[in-house]
Length: 562
Image (cartoon, rainbow, N blue to C red; front, side, top):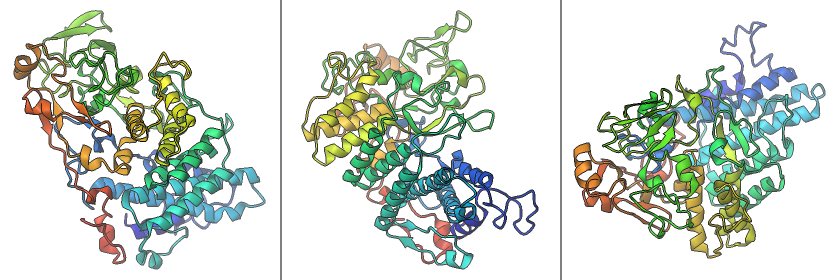
């Protein structure tokens, strides 16, 4: 749907009916009759949190991810204004903004008939959604079309882009209003929507994306000061289906098989369990981003052994990536080319190992499988209903620490915030400094590297890596490095297995951003290049405006380079 139509029809239709507005039967909602009571507005507010409006950023756009030999328009530098993802994102984002505007402009209809606290929640959620969605648009596109009004078609035809700094201030204002109006928490019988903490936390994320570190610091600290959230004690269990509404989660969109709102996950699952064998999997780049248990990168730590790469690693390594020879979904996972059979714990017998390429050519091309969040509950229908976690407290702590580092305000609160997150990974108390590699340095460049590696370990496959590499301006570095995987089976045995170099034949160097250089392994002929990633800077640091929007509105100007 075109932008002009989205703003118009989205605002007048709100959330309710697909029926022809001219018919207006009593059983259907309409712009004339809707928003007349608490139930109707509540339905409209609930609709702002439909999963289609909260897609997030795909890890497929980053260096944490491998999809065999496939790339995306972002990772092969072919992104343009006709890409379906951009058109869908643009359309749905303006649709939900229009609906938020419509709610805010119609609340006066029920003043005096709806309790003030309820009206505040309605308004707070609408302000929150409008802020979050305009924030996403600004981050991805720069200057964007901005309106808080219900527009008719003639007005929509004349819309032009508003300077991003103007929109940015409006986003901050909306988040502040939301934080003032929203409750700290909801009752057990209420729908769980945005909260005061969510408004603070999402404001902090947007401020980091904008480079406003003082705003990010203050917003993150405001969320922390609520004392409403705490880290869940078990990192592994945090992401499982049965872990509902833990105290760490600040804002999430629920999934439900009963409501047919699920996540298709078969590509992530082992072939032995009926999945498609790591068609989508963690990258070797991500694997080397996990520190060793002494807190050092793999190229500095004497504990790292490339032939036993899971040993002596930060616990989040084996929480995120399936460890070789471990039990996973009731099978032993082992991609070694000579492991032709594995244990099936469902039957208590060994069976053919479909997770090695010597048996199944389309087993994982790099030997890795995703473990984070993977649950036996996903079987046998391969539809996951884990909540879509958009913001959790660990992210707030790390955002606070990063903002303070970039402001040159390095103090004990910075170290405490990082160590709180790190200690949880080791399942120890932050004060037990001998039981985990506590951060003690106060040197800026060292802490910048630490926070970047900490975010990567903690937030892997949660949709945050793309935002990070864009706002840190390192996407042109990490996405201009090729994707590597294992050699084909015969060559793998000859060059890696038989000389005793399985699994990784070399240890890569890790740079100041925590990024591994895998090129020497390829140049030595010990690994295979799966795909050539490309990213064009500075062009790709913004997305293009959808082509069809440019064609129908002469006042919309395209971003440079597209």
